[in-house]
Image (cartoon, rainbow, N blue to C red; front, side, top):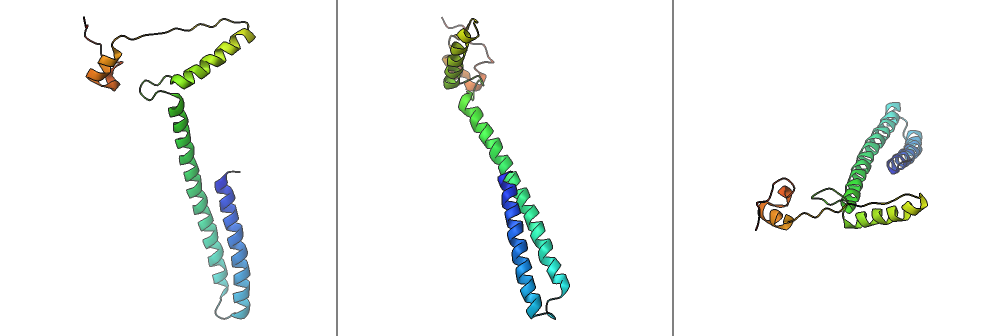
Length: 138
């Protein structure tokens, strides 16, 4: 059960118990000043507030889940080029190296070195380093 559901249900139960207790006492001691319709106003109010609270807490949980997913993504991917960052790459590489002998398979890796990428990033900006071609620097 989600936390928002637990909070909403707890609020509704506590409110219903309080309204039931206080309404009974007020209705007993002040019967003319406390018509029957007043009993229902409190119950409807509690239910509406409980639903509103559930919706708000569920929205917050959804926002939090989206932010946690984004943080997880930023923790393992390079924000500029989107492949795994260095830490995630070595973690996956270690796992692949350990898995290869167990599965009796081979492991291969390709390495791509881009010349003058720093010059391209400094000249055109990091966002265009992969898009533009660099002029030949002799």
